[in-house]
Length: 177
Image (cartoon, rainbow, N blue to C red; front, side, top):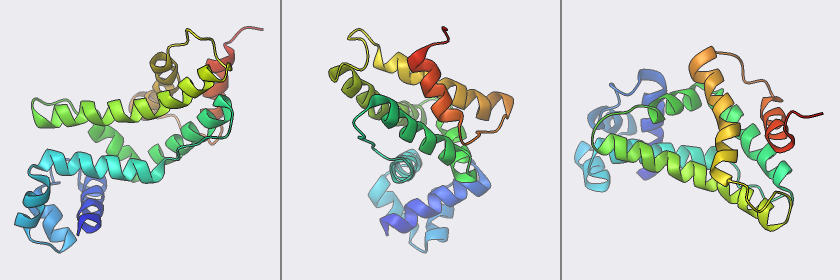
């Protein structure tokens, strides 16, 4: 039941948007009773962010190649591919929604967990001596993530296959000669 409900939630978010993703609509699409959904998730917001987190975990690897550069190449390439799909774009747009209450709390928790996962890769690079000891993992991850989000949310530029490795290299190497 959980998988059917989460898949229906993602499908509705992708095709119909946040407004149409009601518990009743999800229950109908999943072929379950609405009270079953409420019993398990309590609120629409809990359901939406569980679906977001589950889908993202399935789509993104947890690389451990032995180098921070390759780990970040793999993670951010997978992220760019995911964001380039209709489901990824819909999930990203929902993840940026700012509302009062439970949806806002869920949005913050969702993005915090995604950043912490990427920051772990940076911390491993620091521990291995690949990055300076005073490297700020959060800022480094933001420096790579920001341009991807700008392309999707602001400029509409494509997420070319090589964009993520180029961003990782630019952030790790800088723009100096």
